[in-house]
Length: 170
Image 1 (cartoon, rainbow, N blue to C red):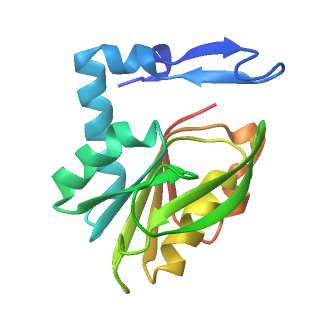
Image 2: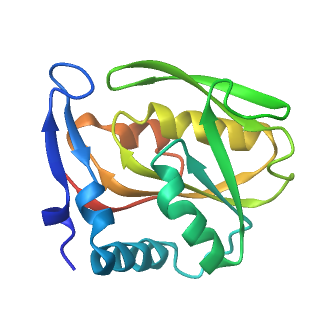
């Protein structure tokens, strides 16, 4: 299925000069939503996964479904001061600013195989930060999974040591 028609461009969001890829048209169509979830699962193949990490906030949409279908646990990585338990943090650069991500200290056990999922791979800063957090806890990132990759921003360069898959490339 071609998912591109379900992605809407929003110019100058969240800041002037940025063209935001809006996935809400995909999410509101039940058939497209389910087919995208199935296609994202297909990108994983037979790889053993212990935990699926969803990235705040749109990574939380598909990551729990992937975890359930893979028989894996679901872990949230959130923006600073949003998690209630003990955390570790990692700062990062993104297309339109900087930020800090956090993960619970007990979210991933040493040696666990981890799938990182987010909606968009842009400059790669967020994905790189998440991979660092997983590794700080002793996990092994076996794949980074995205609904969309913005190839012109070269974000894949920041995660070139990891397997990367995306349903759509712009």
